[in-house]
Image (cartoon, rainbow, N blue to C red; front, top):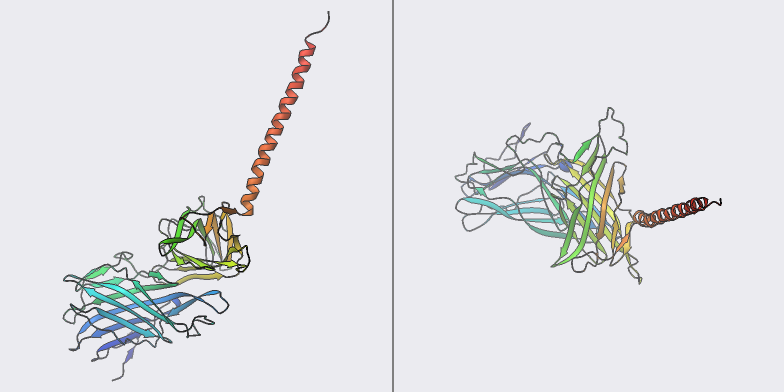
Length: 434
């Protein structure tokens, strides 16, 4: 029997070992499709049920040794081969396949009272040239990450409307509008819900809320917003970030970050280091620092080494990627990148420092302001910054300070000399002959 479709979506097939229903998503992240998987046991009773939306942001290397961001979303040709119910001794598995050789799965284990997700396995195929044009590495690439889902009471449905994300190995996985129950008892979906931490009892995918780190400027027309926006009184707090390769620190960064977004409404967003986590990759000639501020804002800084064959080698910032999502429904607010930078240049083995504010022009709608910057993406020793090469603006300040002090001392000397001359003249007039 063929599946029937209604205005509300496809109807479930009356009998199947695992039924997969695809519903076209609303204005979600990269126009992703909502997936509904209903896995049934031998008696045709539901044993594993899930409905969710997800998309992927993948950083990959091109043949020209540049790095690009690819966005991968679910389409209508999704299958569910390999999904299994699980039992007391065997993990349940939810698995889907989509696109040109891409797949995603998560396994669930249970105790006497709870169930939880353990590991997520994601495979993307860079032979899919529509998603990964000019990819240097060809073929399927698999990553395995630990799921952060908390244990859920058996016979409870886990629900999470808000966007959650997991980052690992140049891949960020986004999930939202999730409804899930593993180890369904008696074929009946539970009525009690267990909500994720990000949800509240009234959570619903409506509009992006404001927060204390966002300053808005009013606008009365739909014309492009000005590129300059009044800044908040306070500069962003300075954060300390680091990456490790094995047990050794391979990248150090200290910086305060502020995003200047000029889309429908001008926004100034201070990145809060207290909620920001660092991830990324280290290498001999390329390194990437990825920051996730915990509010669906992601910033990637990519550094490369130039003159790799010369005796004196230097590094510099080559590329910056920024993705801002609506943390309620996962939709993209802004995605921008610039891979033509030649900033923050310093000798390999040194660090780059600039205490003064700097501006990185990502595109006409986005700027990044940096404060109290110090960065070393290569050859970190003993978890400490090496000798710093300062930016020109700081060097000007260092030159001006001694000049100003010298001028002040010179003026003081002149003032003392003049006072001395006046004093001598007064002393001579006091000894007149009688």
